[in-house]
Length: 470
Ligand SMILES: [Zn+2]
Image 1: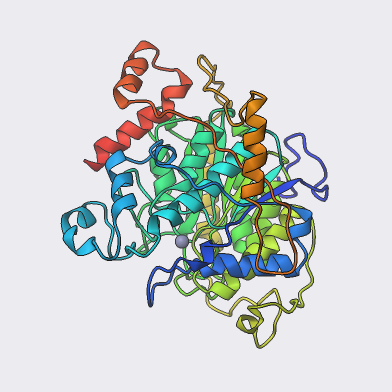
Image 2 (image 1 turned 180 degrees about the vertical axis):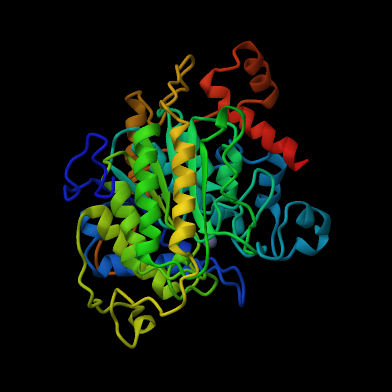
């Protein structure tokens, strides 16, 4: 189990993968406000590094189609989405009650373009799921996504809409079992909560636990009802290093892949688990962090790579650039190429940075106990759940009629992107599927008709979430 995904049919790890990369040149312009730790500029820095390392030529670069209201409402409450669409820095003083209700204003401030920022990052993640569903690529990447704290009707921890939940819902149209893995230093609470009562999604979060945001993610939280044993939490302490981290990550994820056998995987690559993060307290190197990407890639299952936290932005850009190289099967030179943000990377101007000498508070004994506990939970899953598709959701990403071909070509022309360097990337298209959100009453009625219909599973989950929040 330590040496890669040999439990599933897979090509050698070094085999090239077809990678689709989602990037909107506007994303770096969104600004949470002075002093705020979350800086979308890091996505633009990552992109610049990718361009100058020559990686854009090896991927399909796609500009995401913004998620529409109805796409966001597949998970989020209608009134919450309407609020996000309507709120502006100018109007917010008249909305005190609503701001409080939706937890917007402090960690999650109102800023110019907030709603289009949400549409952009969610559009990339859902677009990636659509591409994987269609078999267009092996790996899809959206570094602007991964905002794992957002709840059905509430912003949280710098996250407004939960692009990960939306991407998982998209994958569930085609895939019987979806695995979500989260290596952000914070617990992936929003995603866990959304799928806590279903066995169609397994969530696994590795995070700092104990007097740390968001406070959830105890090893004893394992899921509920049909979802029991399908949520896994790996609580860690300050200063964890590469060796300690991988001594848990590989055995646990190897066992998860063996017993759960997902047909699609989402890996949230939050970079606040790196050494030296402004808000974090772990001691991972970029190679140690990227080892998680390398390992999950080795199983050769359709993979969606998302961003997440990461607040020492030069290291975030380093990390996600290096991990894009891992996705492509390319090892990058440590010496950084000259580019527009080169001065951020002094004095060494290298891709890799040494971890610190901070104390690793995770003793061997504690790590072994956690590993044993989690492997024991996994041993309760003798077989991957088999899920009959009684009503397969419509598979309607692309127009089929000939007349729509013109629309696609027009779309492609209109969405040709000029990226801010001399290299002109492949211009692709992402066509969102046409989806009518099902009314909750209808879902409830259907649930009564055939309680184990797989299409209703996440809707049960969604309504449970509503009840908990109200
Ligand atoms: Zn985080």
